[in-house]
Image 1 (cartoon, rainbow, N blue to C red):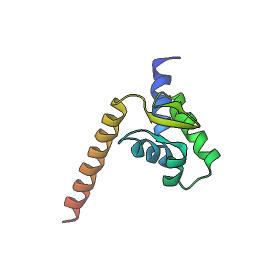
Image 2 (cartoon, one colour):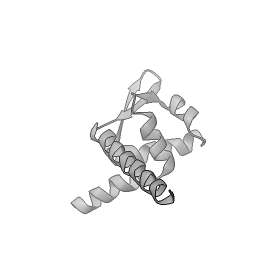
Image 3 (spheres, rainbow, N blue to C red):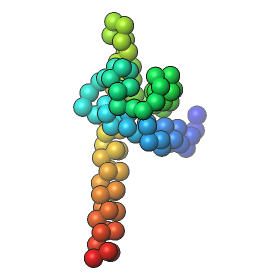
Image 4 (spheres, rainbow, N blue to C red):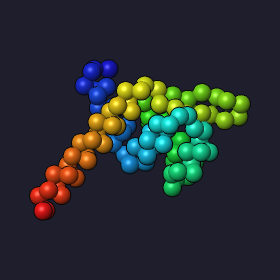
Length: 101
């Protein structure tokens, strides 16, 4: 797989509101599917598809804990990436607000 394709795979995986919500909910720590399903308005099968995309992109990892499958962020740099984007959004909102004044 070419490096450009790897970039695209990661950014595509993050380019969905539900997947962003999933990743952000995992920032404090690992959760099982049942806990993730409480925060998402989709069926468990739809949630599982989103989780698979995030796993395949190397963003999440999963491990079995008894009957539960626990999900967590695979690489802490994903959190840094989300923080960078959040700061960009805050700056843009601030700039928009200043233009309205």
